[in-house]
Length: 259
Image (tube, rainbow, N blue to C red; front, side):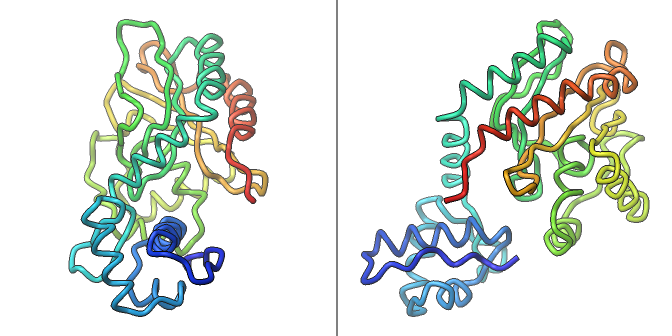
């Protein structure tokens, strides 16, 4: 995916150029070089280098190993998380709470953050036995229901880049680590419309995830439910699909609209 060119700013200030640069890096979906950004934003290379260095020092960008590429930094990631949790946060929490009330298990609203899954929001079940993760927590992409689902719906080029960099170390004996088996799993997820975690991340824990799509049909996030397998079987999870899909449609209404 190539960076999307932001709106042109005639005679923009340094702040304008910095915001345009952040916008371009965030939209790229990959690490980008300073020459790429300069060409995209019509910036002189010295200006591009200086802005990238300042933004990296402030935590809005992060320099990749080798020093030639920049990607989203931790401060910008926190900013995005706060925005997502903000305005529509109460609506999303009410939707998740409704799922928990019906299913009786913890429900999560997740998205991709680099090569991991980030929890944007969650509502905990009231059981004493549960996996406790705060919003902002990250989990692996290759052995979680949300991670596999979001990965399966990426465009081919971005999915290939992520797969190349993912450490497929097994978390349990059930973790899928073979390339062919994993490719087949992703294809099956797309075909059936949901993803399962069959104790692939933690033994004794199962999960199901369904996509949250924007108005154009692109998968931007996921709604997922996980629970101990002794209490919540995969068969029971699949039986609850109508509940999860209804919630996913409601969550889609809370996503920002394209200008």
